[in-house]
Image (tube, rainbow, N blue to C red; front, side, top):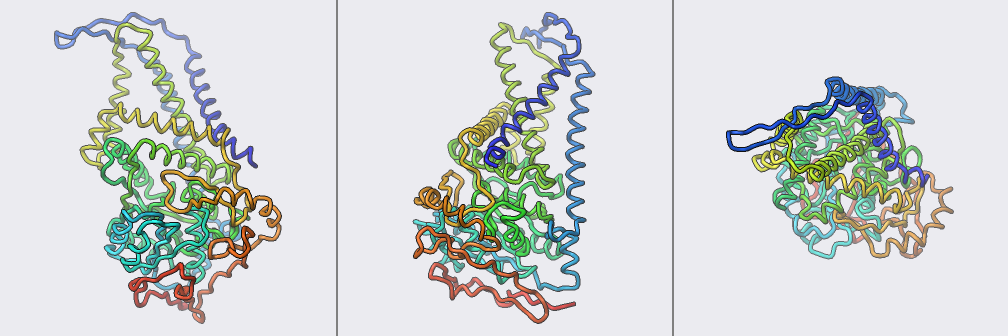
Length: 570
Protein backbone atom coordinates (compact mmCIF):
# COMPACT_ATOMS: atom_id res chain seq x y z
CA UNK A 1 0.00 0.00 0.00
CA UNK A 2 2.96 2.35 0.50
CA UNK A 3 3.55 2.86 -3.21
CA UNK A 4 -0.16 3.58 -3.72
CA UNK A 5 -0.21 6.37 -1.16
CA UNK A 6 3.06 7.84 -2.34
CA UNK A 7 1.86 7.94 -5.94
CA UNK A 8 -1.28 9.99 -5.22
CA UNK A 9 0.38 13.33 -5.95
CA UNK A 10 2.03 12.04 -9.11
CA UNK A 11 -1.28 10.61 -10.33
CA UNK A 12 -3.01 13.95 -9.83
CA UNK A 13 -0.23 15.98 -11.48
CA UNK A 14 -0.01 13.45 -14.33
CA UNK A 15 -3.76 13.55 -14.98
CA UNK A 16 -3.82 17.36 -14.90
CA UNK A 17 -0.83 17.48 -17.26
CA UNK A 18 -2.55 15.09 -19.64
CA UNK A 19 -5.63 17.30 -19.66
CA UNK A 20 -3.52 20.39 -20.37
CA UNK A 21 -1.72 18.55 -23.18
CA UNK A 22 -4.98 17.45 -24.79
CA UNK A 23 -6.28 21.01 -24.62
CA UNK A 24 -3.10 22.32 -26.24
CA UNK A 25 -3.30 19.72 -29.01
CA UNK A 26 -6.94 20.59 -29.66
CA UNK A 27 -6.09 24.28 -30.00
CA UNK A 28 -3.03 23.60 -32.14
CA UNK A 29 -4.94 21.27 -34.47
CA UNK A 30 -6.44 24.20 -36.36
CA UNK A 31 -4.54 26.16 -38.98
CA UNK A 32 -2.64 28.93 -37.18
CA UNK A 33 -3.22 32.38 -38.55
CA UNK A 34 -0.25 34.34 -39.80
CA UNK A 35 0.84 36.97 -37.33
CA UNK A 36 0.50 40.60 -38.27
CA UNK A 37 2.59 43.53 -37.23
CA UNK A 38 1.10 45.47 -34.31
CA UNK A 39 -0.71 48.67 -35.07
CA UNK A 40 0.35 52.04 -33.74
CA UNK A 41 -1.83 54.57 -31.98
CA UNK A 42 -1.74 57.64 -29.76
CA UNK A 43 -3.54 57.85 -26.42
CA UNK A 44 -4.75 61.26 -25.21
CA UNK A 45 -2.56 62.84 -27.84
CA UNK A 46 0.52 62.14 -25.70
CA UNK A 47 1.38 58.46 -25.39
CA UNK A 48 2.36 56.44 -28.44
CA UNK A 49 1.34 52.80 -28.03
CA UNK A 50 1.42 49.59 -30.06
CA UNK A 51 -1.54 47.22 -29.94
CA UNK A 52 -2.64 43.97 -31.53
CA UNK A 53 -6.32 43.11 -31.96
CA UNK A 54 -5.66 39.40 -32.49
CA UNK A 55 -7.85 37.03 -30.45
CA UNK A 56 -8.42 33.26 -30.31
CA UNK A 57 -10.87 31.93 -32.93
CA UNK A 58 -14.50 31.78 -31.77
CA UNK A 59 -14.54 27.98 -32.03
CA UNK A 60 -11.64 27.77 -29.56
CA UNK A 61 -13.35 30.11 -27.12
CA UNK A 62 -16.63 28.23 -27.36
CA UNK A 63 -14.87 24.89 -26.93
CA UNK A 64 -12.98 26.11 -23.85
CA UNK A 65 -16.13 27.51 -22.23
CA UNK A 66 -18.11 24.40 -23.13
CA UNK A 67 -15.54 22.01 -21.67
CA UNK A 68 -15.33 24.05 -18.46
CA UNK A 69 -19.12 24.09 -18.05
CA UNK A 70 -19.42 20.38 -18.78
CA UNK A 71 -16.75 19.50 -16.23
CA UNK A 72 -18.29 21.73 -13.56
CA UNK A 73 -21.79 20.38 -14.22
CA UNK A 74 -20.53 16.80 -14.29
CA UNK A 75 -18.78 17.12 -10.93
CA UNK A 76 -21.81 18.83 -9.36
CA UNK A 77 -24.29 16.25 -10.67
CA UNK A 78 -22.14 13.30 -9.65
CA UNK A 79 -21.61 14.80 -6.20
CA UNK A 80 -25.36 15.30 -5.77
CA UNK A 81 -26.01 11.72 -6.84
CA UNK A 82 -23.49 10.44 -4.29
CA UNK A 83 -25.08 12.54 -1.54
CA UNK A 84 -28.58 11.33 -2.46
CA UNK A 85 -27.46 7.71 -2.43
CA UNK A 86 -25.86 8.14 0.99
CA UNK A 87 -28.98 9.77 2.44
CA UNK A 88 -31.23 7.00 1.14
CA UNK A 89 -29.00 4.13 2.19
CA UNK A 90 -30.68 1.69 4.58
CA UNK A 91 -27.61 -0.47 5.21
CA UNK A 92 -26.53 0.04 8.85
CA UNK A 93 -23.54 -2.21 8.38
CA UNK A 94 -21.98 -0.15 5.60
CA UNK A 95 -23.40 3.31 6.39
CA UNK A 96 -24.44 3.40 10.06
CA UNK A 97 -24.78 7.21 10.02
CA UNK A 98 -26.95 7.48 6.89
CA UNK A 99 -30.00 9.69 7.58
CA UNK A 100 -32.46 6.93 6.68
CA UNK A 101 -30.76 4.53 9.11
CA UNK A 102 -30.60 7.09 11.92
CA UNK A 103 -34.23 8.18 11.47
CA UNK A 104 -35.42 4.57 11.55
CA UNK A 105 -33.44 3.72 14.70
CA UNK A 106 -34.52 6.84 16.61
CA UNK A 107 -38.17 6.97 15.56
CA UNK A 108 -40.41 7.43 18.61
CA UNK A 109 -37.47 7.97 20.98
CA UNK A 110 -36.89 11.25 22.81
CA UNK A 111 -33.19 11.53 23.64
CA UNK A 112 -33.51 14.70 25.70
CA UNK A 113 -32.38 18.22 24.84
CA UNK A 114 -29.21 18.79 22.86
CA UNK A 115 -26.21 19.33 25.15
CA UNK A 116 -22.76 20.59 24.22
CA UNK A 117 -19.44 19.54 25.74
CA UNK A 118 -16.55 21.66 24.47
CA UNK A 119 -13.06 20.19 24.12
CA UNK A 120 -10.23 22.68 23.63
CA UNK A 121 -6.88 21.04 22.78
CA UNK A 122 -4.16 23.37 24.00
CA UNK A 123 -0.39 23.41 24.13
CA UNK A 124 1.23 26.56 25.53
CA UNK A 125 -1.72 28.81 24.70
CA UNK A 126 -1.52 31.25 27.61
CA UNK A 127 -1.68 34.19 25.21
CA UNK A 128 -5.14 33.35 23.85
CA UNK A 129 -6.85 30.78 26.10
CA UNK A 130 -8.56 33.44 28.23
CA UNK A 131 -10.13 35.13 25.20
CA UNK A 132 -11.28 31.78 23.83
CA UNK A 133 -12.94 30.82 27.11
CA UNK A 134 -14.53 34.27 27.34
CA UNK A 135 -16.10 33.80 23.90
CA UNK A 136 -17.61 30.52 25.13
CA UNK A 137 -19.00 32.16 28.27
CA UNK A 138 -20.52 34.92 26.11
CA UNK A 139 -22.53 32.49 23.98
CA UNK A 140 -26.27 33.11 23.87
CA UNK A 141 -26.55 29.35 24.44
CA UNK A 142 -23.60 28.52 26.74
CA UNK A 143 -22.20 24.98 26.69
CA UNK A 144 -22.94 22.50 29.46
CA UNK A 145 -19.26 21.62 29.92
CA UNK A 146 -15.92 23.10 28.91
CA UNK A 147 -12.80 20.94 29.07
CA UNK A 148 -9.33 22.23 28.23
CA UNK A 149 -7.21 19.30 27.01
CA UNK A 150 -3.76 20.45 28.09
CA UNK A 151 -0.92 18.57 26.43
CA UNK A 152 2.66 19.00 27.66
CA UNK A 153 2.05 22.65 28.57
CA UNK A 154 5.05 24.48 30.02
CA UNK A 155 3.44 27.92 30.37
CA UNK A 156 0.43 29.18 32.36
CA UNK A 157 -2.25 27.62 30.16
CA UNK A 158 -3.41 25.18 32.86
CA UNK A 159 -3.65 27.66 35.78
CA UNK A 160 -5.38 30.22 33.56
CA UNK A 161 -7.97 27.65 32.52
CA UNK A 162 -8.59 26.62 36.13
CA UNK A 163 -8.92 30.23 37.18
CA UNK A 164 -11.59 30.62 34.50
CA UNK A 165 -13.61 27.87 36.19
CA UNK A 166 -13.42 25.16 33.53
CA UNK A 167 -12.31 21.56 33.66
CA UNK A 168 -8.73 20.75 32.76
CA UNK A 169 -7.60 17.36 31.51
CA UNK A 170 -3.85 16.96 31.26
CA UNK A 171 -2.83 14.21 28.86
CA UNK A 172 -0.80 11.23 30.03
CA UNK A 173 2.23 10.03 28.04
CA UNK A 174 0.79 11.46 24.84
CA UNK A 175 3.12 11.29 21.84
CA UNK A 176 0.52 11.78 19.14
CA UNK A 177 0.00 15.52 19.32
CA UNK A 178 -3.45 17.05 18.92
CA UNK A 179 -5.18 13.87 17.72
CA UNK A 180 -3.72 11.83 20.58
CA UNK A 181 -4.78 14.36 23.18
CA UNK A 182 -8.31 14.50 21.82
CA UNK A 183 -8.53 10.71 21.74
CA UNK A 184 -7.65 10.59 25.43
CA UNK A 185 -10.32 13.16 26.26
CA UNK A 186 -12.97 11.49 24.09
CA UNK A 187 -12.24 8.11 25.67
CA UNK A 188 -13.39 9.67 28.95
CA UNK A 189 -16.44 11.66 27.87
CA UNK A 190 -18.01 9.60 25.06
CA UNK A 191 -19.09 6.44 26.94
CA UNK A 192 -21.66 8.33 29.05
CA UNK A 193 -23.17 10.30 26.18
CA UNK A 194 -26.42 9.69 24.34
CA UNK A 195 -27.80 10.55 20.92
CA UNK A 196 -28.47 14.22 21.70
CA UNK A 197 -25.23 14.80 23.59
CA UNK A 198 -22.71 16.56 21.37
CA UNK A 199 -19.01 17.32 21.45
CA UNK A 200 -17.58 20.54 20.13
CA UNK A 201 -13.87 20.58 19.27
CA UNK A 202 -12.35 24.03 18.89
CA UNK A 203 -8.83 25.42 18.68
CA UNK A 204 -7.44 27.42 21.56
CA UNK A 205 -6.75 30.41 19.30
CA UNK A 206 -10.34 30.67 18.03
CA UNK A 207 -13.06 33.14 19.03
CA UNK A 208 -16.69 32.17 18.46
CA UNK A 209 -19.44 34.45 17.27
CA UNK A 210 -21.95 34.94 20.09
CA UNK A 211 -24.64 32.96 18.25
CA UNK A 212 -22.51 29.99 17.16
CA UNK A 213 -23.73 27.44 19.70
CA UNK A 214 -27.33 28.62 19.53
CA UNK A 215 -27.31 28.10 15.78
CA UNK A 216 -25.69 24.68 16.09
CA UNK A 217 -28.12 23.53 18.79
CA UNK A 218 -31.10 24.71 16.74
CA UNK A 219 -29.90 22.79 13.68
CA UNK A 220 -29.22 19.62 15.68
CA UNK A 221 -32.57 19.86 17.47
CA UNK A 222 -34.52 20.30 14.24
CA UNK A 223 -32.90 17.34 12.46
CA UNK A 224 -31.98 14.27 14.49
CA UNK A 225 -30.23 12.79 11.42
CA UNK A 226 -27.75 15.70 11.32
CA UNK A 227 -24.43 14.38 12.63
CA UNK A 228 -22.14 17.43 12.60
CA UNK A 229 -22.19 21.21 12.33
CA UNK A 230 -19.05 22.97 11.12
CA UNK A 231 -18.05 26.59 11.49
CA UNK A 232 -17.33 29.22 8.86
CA UNK A 233 -13.96 30.66 9.79
CA UNK A 234 -12.59 34.11 9.08
CA UNK A 235 -9.07 35.39 9.58
CA UNK A 236 -8.25 37.62 12.53
CA UNK A 237 -6.84 41.10 12.19
CA UNK A 238 -3.16 41.93 11.97
CA UNK A 239 -0.07 40.45 10.27
CA UNK A 240 0.01 43.14 7.56
CA UNK A 241 -0.11 42.15 3.89
CA UNK A 242 0.36 38.43 4.49
CA UNK A 243 -2.54 38.52 6.92
CA UNK A 244 -4.75 40.23 4.34
CA UNK A 245 -3.87 37.57 1.77
CA UNK A 246 -5.18 34.92 4.16
CA UNK A 247 -8.28 36.92 5.10
CA UNK A 248 -9.16 37.30 1.42
CA UNK A 249 -8.64 33.58 0.90
CA UNK A 250 -10.87 32.65 3.85
CA UNK A 251 -13.56 35.12 2.75
CA UNK A 252 -13.74 33.52 -0.69
CA UNK A 253 -13.87 30.05 0.84
CA UNK A 254 -16.80 31.00 3.09
CA UNK A 255 -18.58 32.57 0.12
CA UNK A 256 -18.24 29.29 -1.77
CA UNK A 257 -19.70 27.37 1.19
CA UNK A 258 -22.67 29.73 1.42
CA UNK A 259 -23.33 29.29 -2.29
CA UNK A 260 -23.33 25.53 -1.67
CA UNK A 261 -25.98 26.13 1.04
CA UNK A 262 -23.68 24.92 3.77
CA UNK A 263 -22.69 21.61 2.18
CA UNK A 264 -19.41 20.73 3.82
CA UNK A 265 -15.99 20.52 2.21
CA UNK A 266 -14.14 20.05 5.51
CA UNK A 267 -15.39 20.22 9.08
CA UNK A 268 -12.94 22.84 10.22
CA UNK A 269 -10.74 22.11 13.21
CA UNK A 270 -11.21 25.69 14.39
CA UNK A 271 -14.71 24.86 15.68
CA UNK A 272 -17.07 21.98 14.82
CA UNK A 273 -19.85 20.21 16.72
CA UNK A 274 -20.36 16.44 16.49
CA UNK A 275 -23.05 14.16 17.82
CA UNK A 276 -21.63 11.57 20.19
CA UNK A 277 -23.29 8.89 18.05
CA UNK A 278 -21.18 9.95 15.06
CA UNK A 279 -17.89 9.90 16.95
CA UNK A 280 -18.68 6.51 18.48
CA UNK A 281 -19.45 5.11 15.03
CA UNK A 282 -16.11 6.36 13.69
CA UNK A 283 -14.25 4.77 16.62
CA UNK A 284 -16.02 1.45 16.02
CA UNK A 285 -15.23 1.42 12.29
CA UNK A 286 -11.52 2.19 12.66
CA UNK A 287 -9.50 -0.75 11.40
CA UNK A 288 -12.44 -2.12 9.41
CA UNK A 289 -14.03 0.32 7.00
CA UNK A 290 -11.85 3.25 8.08
CA UNK A 291 -8.08 3.56 8.55
CA UNK A 292 -6.70 3.94 12.05
CA UNK A 293 -6.55 2.23 15.43
CA UNK A 294 -9.79 0.56 16.57
CA UNK A 295 -11.39 2.67 19.29
CA UNK A 296 -9.74 5.95 18.27
CA UNK A 297 -11.94 8.76 17.03
CA UNK A 298 -9.07 10.65 15.40
CA UNK A 299 -6.54 8.91 13.17
CA UNK A 300 -3.24 9.79 14.82
CA UNK A 301 -1.32 9.07 11.61
CA UNK A 302 -3.15 11.76 9.62
CA UNK A 303 -1.39 15.11 9.24
CA UNK A 304 -4.73 16.92 8.90
CA UNK A 305 -7.02 15.26 11.41
CA UNK A 306 -10.02 17.49 10.68
CA UNK A 307 -9.95 16.65 6.96
CA UNK A 308 -9.53 12.95 7.72
CA UNK A 309 -12.42 12.93 10.20
CA UNK A 310 -14.64 14.65 7.63
CA UNK A 311 -13.90 11.94 5.06
CA UNK A 312 -14.48 9.26 7.70
CA UNK A 313 -17.91 10.66 8.56
CA UNK A 314 -18.85 10.99 4.89
CA UNK A 315 -17.75 7.39 4.31
CA UNK A 316 -20.25 6.32 6.99
CA UNK A 317 -23.06 8.32 5.38
CA UNK A 318 -23.16 11.19 7.88
CA UNK A 319 -25.17 14.32 7.12
CA UNK A 320 -23.16 17.50 7.84
CA UNK A 321 -23.59 21.22 7.35
CA UNK A 322 -21.69 24.49 7.82
CA UNK A 323 -24.48 27.07 8.31
CA UNK A 324 -24.01 30.80 7.82
CA UNK A 325 -24.90 31.58 11.45
CA UNK A 326 -21.98 29.56 12.85
CA UNK A 327 -18.93 31.78 12.34
CA UNK A 328 -15.57 31.90 14.08
CA UNK A 329 -12.47 34.06 13.92
CA UNK A 330 -9.09 32.33 13.94
CA UNK A 331 -5.52 33.57 13.93
CA UNK A 332 -3.66 34.03 10.65
CA UNK A 333 -0.06 33.02 10.12
CA UNK A 334 2.12 36.10 10.79
CA UNK A 335 5.15 35.15 8.65
CA UNK A 336 5.84 33.51 5.30
CA UNK A 337 7.78 30.75 7.05
CA UNK A 338 4.85 29.91 9.33
CA UNK A 339 2.41 30.08 6.42
CA UNK A 340 4.63 27.78 4.36
CA UNK A 341 4.73 25.21 7.17
CA UNK A 342 0.97 25.40 7.72
CA UNK A 343 -0.03 25.07 4.08
CA UNK A 344 2.53 22.35 3.38
CA UNK A 345 1.00 20.39 6.23
CA UNK A 346 -2.52 20.98 4.91
CA UNK A 347 -1.68 20.05 1.34
CA UNK A 348 0.37 17.00 2.14
CA UNK A 349 -2.22 15.86 4.67
CA UNK A 350 -4.98 16.13 2.07
CA UNK A 351 -3.01 14.02 -0.40
CA UNK A 352 -2.18 11.42 2.25
CA UNK A 353 -5.83 11.14 3.24
CA UNK A 354 -6.79 10.49 -0.38
CA UNK A 355 -4.14 7.79 -0.51
CA UNK A 356 -5.47 6.22 2.69
CA UNK A 357 -9.11 6.16 1.53
CA UNK A 358 -8.58 5.64 -2.19
CA UNK A 359 -11.17 6.42 -4.84
CA UNK A 360 -14.60 5.93 -3.32
CA UNK A 361 -17.85 7.93 -3.48
CA UNK A 362 -17.05 9.88 -0.32
CA UNK A 363 -13.71 11.06 -1.75
CA UNK A 364 -14.84 11.90 -5.29
CA UNK A 365 -15.16 15.62 -4.59
CA UNK A 366 -11.69 15.75 -3.03
CA UNK A 367 -10.08 14.00 -5.99
CA UNK A 368 -11.79 16.45 -8.36
CA UNK A 369 -10.65 19.36 -6.20
CA UNK A 370 -7.04 18.17 -6.24
CA UNK A 371 -7.18 17.71 -10.02
CA UNK A 372 -8.41 21.28 -10.30
CA UNK A 373 -5.54 22.52 -8.15
CA UNK A 374 -3.06 20.52 -10.21
CA UNK A 375 -4.38 21.97 -13.45
CA UNK A 376 -4.31 25.45 -11.92
CA UNK A 377 -0.64 25.00 -11.06
CA UNK A 378 0.11 24.13 -14.70
CA UNK A 379 -2.08 26.91 -16.13
CA UNK A 380 -0.75 29.72 -13.93
CA UNK A 381 2.83 28.52 -14.33
CA UNK A 382 2.45 28.43 -18.10
CA UNK A 383 0.91 31.92 -18.14
CA UNK A 384 3.71 33.44 -16.09
CA UNK A 385 6.33 31.65 -18.20
CA UNK A 386 4.77 33.01 -21.39
CA UNK A 387 4.76 36.55 -20.00
CA UNK A 388 8.45 36.29 -19.08
CA UNK A 389 9.35 34.92 -22.53
CA UNK A 390 7.47 37.75 -24.23
CA UNK A 391 9.28 40.35 -22.12
CA UNK A 392 12.62 38.81 -23.06
CA UNK A 393 11.86 38.29 -26.77
CA UNK A 394 10.37 41.71 -27.59
CA UNK A 395 11.82 45.19 -27.39
CA UNK A 396 8.46 46.96 -27.73
CA UNK A 397 5.50 46.78 -25.37
CA UNK A 398 2.41 45.61 -27.26
CA UNK A 399 -1.10 45.82 -25.84
CA UNK A 400 -3.66 43.07 -26.58
CA UNK A 401 -7.21 44.41 -26.05
CA UNK A 402 -8.76 40.94 -25.92
CA UNK A 403 -6.51 39.76 -23.11
CA UNK A 404 -6.86 43.07 -21.30
CA UNK A 405 -10.61 42.43 -21.32
CA UNK A 406 -10.07 38.95 -19.87
CA UNK A 407 -7.87 40.47 -17.18
CA UNK A 408 -10.54 43.04 -16.31
CA UNK A 409 -13.16 40.30 -15.91
CA UNK A 410 -10.78 38.41 -13.64
CA UNK A 411 -10.12 41.58 -11.61
CA UNK A 412 -13.84 42.19 -11.14
CA UNK A 413 -14.22 38.61 -9.90
CA UNK A 414 -11.37 39.14 -7.43
CA UNK A 415 -13.06 42.23 -5.99
CA UNK A 416 -16.63 40.91 -5.89
CA UNK A 417 -15.68 37.69 -4.10
CA UNK A 418 -14.05 39.59 -1.20
CA UNK A 419 -16.54 42.45 -1.03
CA UNK A 420 -17.71 41.46 2.45
CA UNK A 421 -14.13 41.62 3.70
CA UNK A 422 -14.03 45.42 3.74
CA UNK A 423 -12.13 48.08 1.84
CA UNK A 424 -8.70 46.55 2.46
CA UNK A 425 -9.83 43.25 0.95
CA UNK A 426 -11.33 45.02 -2.07
CA UNK A 427 -8.22 47.13 -2.63
CA UNK A 428 -5.98 44.06 -2.55
CA UNK A 429 -8.29 42.22 -4.96
CA UNK A 430 -8.29 45.22 -7.30
CA UNK A 431 -4.49 45.32 -7.41
CA UNK A 432 -4.56 41.79 -8.95
CA UNK A 433 -0.82 41.12 -9.25
CA UNK A 434 -0.13 40.74 -5.50
CA UNK A 435 -2.79 38.06 -5.36
CA UNK A 436 -1.25 36.37 -8.40
CA UNK A 437 1.98 36.28 -6.42
CA UNK A 438 0.13 34.74 -3.45
CA UNK A 439 -1.48 32.15 -5.73
CA UNK A 440 1.96 31.30 -7.11
CA UNK A 441 3.24 30.86 -3.55
CA UNK A 442 0.45 28.39 -2.80
CA UNK A 443 1.16 26.55 -6.06
CA UNK A 444 4.79 26.14 -5.06
CA UNK A 445 3.62 24.73 -1.72
CA UNK A 446 1.44 22.26 -3.64
CA UNK A 447 4.36 21.09 -5.77
CA UNK A 448 6.55 20.77 -2.66
CA UNK A 449 3.86 18.67 -0.98
CA UNK A 450 3.68 16.34 -3.97
CA UNK A 451 7.48 16.06 -4.04
CA UNK A 452 7.73 15.31 -0.32
CA UNK A 453 4.99 12.70 -0.45
CA UNK A 454 6.32 10.98 -3.57
CA UNK A 455 10.08 10.95 -2.97
CA UNK A 456 10.87 11.90 0.61
CA UNK A 457 7.60 11.01 2.34
CA UNK A 458 7.33 9.13 5.60
CA UNK A 459 5.97 5.58 5.49
CA UNK A 460 2.18 5.83 5.42
CA UNK A 461 0.15 4.47 8.33
CA UNK A 462 -1.39 1.03 8.11
CA UNK A 463 -4.85 -0.04 9.12
CA UNK A 464 -3.41 -1.32 12.40
CA UNK A 465 -0.75 0.36 14.48
CA UNK A 466 0.52 0.34 18.01
CA UNK A 467 -0.92 2.78 20.54
CA UNK A 468 2.64 3.72 21.43
CA UNK A 469 3.64 4.68 17.91
CA UNK A 470 4.57 8.35 17.43
CA UNK A 471 5.27 10.31 14.31
CA UNK A 472 7.32 13.07 15.90
CA UNK A 473 6.44 15.76 13.33
CA UNK A 474 6.52 19.43 14.21
CA UNK A 475 5.01 22.25 12.23
CA UNK A 476 4.10 25.84 12.91
CA UNK A 477 0.41 24.92 13.01
CA UNK A 478 0.61 22.16 15.64
CA UNK A 479 -1.19 22.90 18.89
CA UNK A 480 -0.94 19.66 20.84
CA UNK A 481 1.52 16.82 21.31
CA UNK A 482 5.08 16.43 20.08
CA UNK A 483 6.79 14.47 22.78
CA UNK A 484 10.60 14.42 22.45
CA UNK A 485 10.72 10.64 22.68
CA UNK A 486 8.17 10.13 19.91
CA UNK A 487 10.43 9.02 17.08
CA UNK A 488 12.41 6.65 19.31
CA UNK A 489 9.18 5.12 20.56
CA UNK A 490 8.03 4.64 16.98
CA UNK A 491 11.17 2.70 16.10
CA UNK A 492 11.03 0.67 19.30
CA UNK A 493 7.48 -0.59 18.95
CA UNK A 494 7.22 -1.08 15.19
CA UNK A 495 7.99 -4.80 15.17
CA UNK A 496 5.97 -5.38 18.30
CA UNK A 497 2.98 -3.64 16.69
CA UNK A 498 3.09 -6.07 13.77
CA UNK A 499 2.86 -9.02 16.15
CA UNK A 500 -0.19 -7.74 18.00
CA UNK A 501 -2.29 -6.84 14.96
CA UNK A 502 -4.04 -10.20 14.98
CA UNK A 503 -5.60 -9.78 18.43
CA UNK A 504 -6.43 -6.07 18.38
CA UNK A 505 -9.94 -6.46 16.97
CA UNK A 506 -12.65 -4.59 18.91
CA UNK A 507 -10.13 -3.07 21.35
CA UNK A 508 -8.95 0.42 22.04
CA UNK A 509 -5.94 2.06 23.71
CA UNK A 510 -5.83 2.63 27.44
CA UNK A 511 -7.87 5.80 28.17
CA UNK A 512 -4.99 7.27 30.10
CA UNK A 513 -2.76 7.60 27.07
CA UNK A 514 -2.02 4.32 25.33
CA UNK A 515 1.02 3.26 27.38
CA UNK A 516 1.30 1.63 30.77
CA UNK A 517 4.38 3.22 32.41
CA UNK A 518 5.04 0.01 34.30
CA UNK A 519 5.24 -1.93 31.04
CA UNK A 520 7.55 0.37 29.12
CA UNK A 521 6.61 0.50 25.45
CA UNK A 522 4.27 -2.49 25.50
CA UNK A 523 0.82 -1.29 24.38
CA UNK A 524 -1.93 -1.75 26.89
CA UNK A 525 -5.30 -2.62 25.41
CA UNK A 526 -8.74 -2.95 26.96
CA UNK A 527 -12.06 -4.20 25.70
CA UNK A 528 -14.03 -1.80 23.54
CA UNK A 529 -16.80 -0.27 25.70
CA UNK A 530 -20.35 -1.00 24.60
CA UNK A 531 -22.42 2.04 23.61
CA UNK A 532 -24.68 3.27 26.38
CA UNK A 533 -28.32 2.25 26.04
CA UNK A 534 -30.82 5.06 25.87
CA UNK A 535 -34.30 3.91 26.88
CA UNK A 536 -36.94 4.67 29.46
CA UNK A 537 -35.45 2.29 32.03
CA UNK A 538 -31.84 3.37 31.70
CA UNK A 539 -30.46 6.86 32.02
CA UNK A 540 -26.72 7.10 31.38
CA UNK A 541 -24.61 9.15 33.70
CA UNK A 542 -21.82 11.46 32.74
CA UNK A 543 -18.37 10.12 33.66
CA UNK A 544 -17.27 11.12 37.15
CA UNK A 545 -14.07 13.03 36.52
CA UNK A 546 -13.54 13.45 40.24
CA UNK A 547 -12.61 9.77 40.37
CA UNK A 548 -10.15 10.11 37.50
CA UNK A 549 -6.38 10.40 37.93
CA UNK A 550 -4.93 13.63 39.29
CA UNK A 551 -4.40 14.86 35.74
CA UNK A 552 -8.07 15.90 35.68
CA UNK A 553 -9.33 18.87 37.66
CA UNK A 554 -12.86 20.17 37.65
CA UNK A 555 -13.57 23.85 37.96
CA UNK A 556 -16.45 25.18 40.06
CA UNK A 557 -18.66 26.20 37.13
CA UNK A 558 -18.36 23.33 34.71
CA UNK A 559 -21.73 21.60 35.22
CA UNK A 560 -25.01 23.47 35.14
CA UNK A 561 -28.05 22.08 36.97
CA UNK A 562 -30.24 20.05 34.68
CA UNK A 563 -27.53 19.37 32.13
CA UNK A 564 -28.20 15.62 32.25
CA UNK A 565 -30.28 14.36 29.34
CA UNK A 566 -33.49 12.49 30.19
CA UNK A 567 -34.74 9.81 27.84
CA UNK A 568 -38.34 8.74 27.64
CA UNK A 569 -40.22 6.64 25.17
CA UNK A 570 -42.86 8.41 23.14
